[in-house]
Structures are given as C-alpha cells and as structure tokens.
Length: 440
Image 1 (cartoon, rainbow, N blue to C red):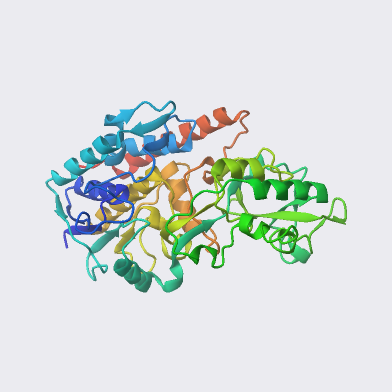
Image 2: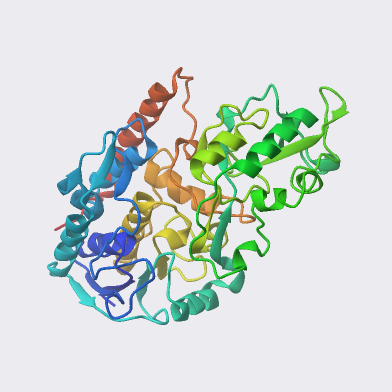
C-alpha cells in the first residue's frame, strides 16, 4: 500500500493531505461537498471558515501565535495560505476567507501527489492507512461507523462544557482544597460563598444574556447537561441543592460550613487548569466572565475556555487516541480536526499536520512521532492523550498545557514569551533530529 486515504477537506483534512503529499506519498482525498452540503458550509472550497475569519493571536506572547509559528516551520499549508491573504486585525491573524479557502483548494487540486474525489464516504475503509478529518458536523452514516470502530461510549455529539480557568489565576487565600465528606484525596478546589455573596451571584446570573444554542435538536440540549442559568431559573435554592451544594464541604481553616460552594476540578494531569463543576452554560462569553468572577476566589480568573453548548461530534480522545493521533486499537487509522477534541481553527489544522506526518511515516514503516511536551504541537497532542477520560471536553491551545518553566518569571507576557522561546528552540532540535522537513 503506497497511498493514504484522507476523508474530509476542511482545515485538518487539507493540512493532513498536504503533509503526506509533500513527502511524495500519494493521497486519495475525499470531500462530499458540493455533492452533499453540511448545515454550516456554503461553498465547495477546501478549508472553508464557517464562523470567524480570525485565526487568533499572531504574537509569540500568545499560545495560538506560537502554535502557528511552529506550523510555519513545518511547511503548513493552512498557515502559509493565511499569511498570503491577511486582512488588518490588530494583534490577530485574520484572513480574507474567500481568497484563503480558494488558495488552499488550488494548491491541493494542483498537487501532483493528491487525487481529489468529490463524494461522500460512509464507512472507514477496511484496509490501508486512513486519516478521518470530517469535523464536528460529520454525516450520520460515517458517524455511526466511527462509533462502531471506536466504541459507542467514545463519541459525543453534543458539546456541553463548563468554563475552564487557570490555577494561577485563582485566589487560593479564598479557595480551599477538599473532597466532599473527605472521601479520597482533596483534589477539588472549593470557593465558599456567604449568603450575601450567593444572592448577588444568583441575581446577576438570572439577568445575564444568553447566546443562541446552535445545532441541538429541540430538547436534546437539556439531557444530562442542564445549563446553570436554566437551573437557577427554577428557584433561588435550586443551585444550593445542586452544583453549589455546601453539604460535606468544610473549610478546615475556619471549621465552618458555607452557604454555598462552587467546586473546581482538575482539567489536566499537571493540575494547571480547572473547570467549574456543573457550570455548563450558554451565556455569552462576556457575561460568563462578568458573572463567574463574582464567585469568591475567581475575581481575577483567567478563562482559557468559556462554557459552550453546541452540536459537536468529538471523540473521547484519552480513551481512544494516542498522541500521534492514531487509534489505540487501530494504529492504521488516524483522526484529525475538531473530532479529536481540539477546539479552534489553528488547533484543528495542527492536528491535521501531526496526523499527516504520522500517516506518512506509517506508510514508510517508520515509527510515529510524539512532539516534545515543551512545544505547542506536543502540548496539545499530549493533553488529548493524557487528560482524564471522564468529563473530557475539547480544548484550545493555551499556556496551561505546557510544562512549567524551571525558573520563576514575573509578568505574564514575559513568562509567555519565555515559554515560546523554549518551545521554538526545542522544536528546531526535534526537526533536525528527525529530519522532519518534507522532501518536495
């Protein structure tokens, strides 16, 4: 077998196909549009941006900016096309979306090692190396086959996630470590609230503006993931008998039970990120920041992900994916894009880059590569593999995923720049060690 099948030509699929083809390996790229359109797409072009035209921060004091720079150094098609078709956007990299997707389409269609098929793929091919990059709106037939291959419990169709904040932004003078009734290790951070603090929070939660919930079938949004604001609307005490229940949580510093307690649970193995337990929400992002910062201890919380509720087909990555983006039980099958549990345009393309490199290596009987944890590419991939599999939710790249610096740096911007400098130095070493640049 001397070719790779790539299913889907969004940002991830196009990037994967490009990385494989640049290594002089034949690619059969399948894209169902325009024969069959999704609810979100409007054109036949590859890499179509369906929401914002921004690929987020451009500077190296920004994790998304670092990720793009790493991709540049690895001959990324997506970042190259973005750099060619920028529009003014301050400190962000934004693009003319039509020229951007047209550029990607042209370069893919003209590549001598890529054959494009405009047809729907309903099942994962039974033989050969395959990259599945069909995105959050994967068609039903293929989604069912993915469930069959990965296991029914491994695939989610609705993304109902609580906000995630950084540990270093939580005021630990106000929060305390404990598990309810002292069961197990004290792994939860608890933010206690007085009656006055709770009533102020409750009043502002009821007044907060909500965003439109997209992609859910009517009623499905509320199955097992009741939004915190909807729950609050059922009565003032509903939350204190639900996710903010103080029973079994005593602050050892005071010996007192609080009126209400907001619990935060570790989101990653390193314990640098925490999610607000039970805070699934469809409040607007600005409202989430305003209202949730009323919680004692979270006054200066840094949100690396806001709560979201939308249609989003994604794998429970820690359960089924390795950090090389192959399935644990089927190493010939790779996944890329939002379906892997990454969130965002650049992150999706980055997963395609990694899946493409490793699919090509598989064809050539080489071992798959895991990028260093100090790099943005490595940090993102290792987060997917190493996160707790219970309550797994998609994630953007952020500095909370990186190993800590060996020395303490004052100032957030300076610290971020130092992490980025370390990442790029480590990436250059890795590129040289592995002879990673493509051969075309």
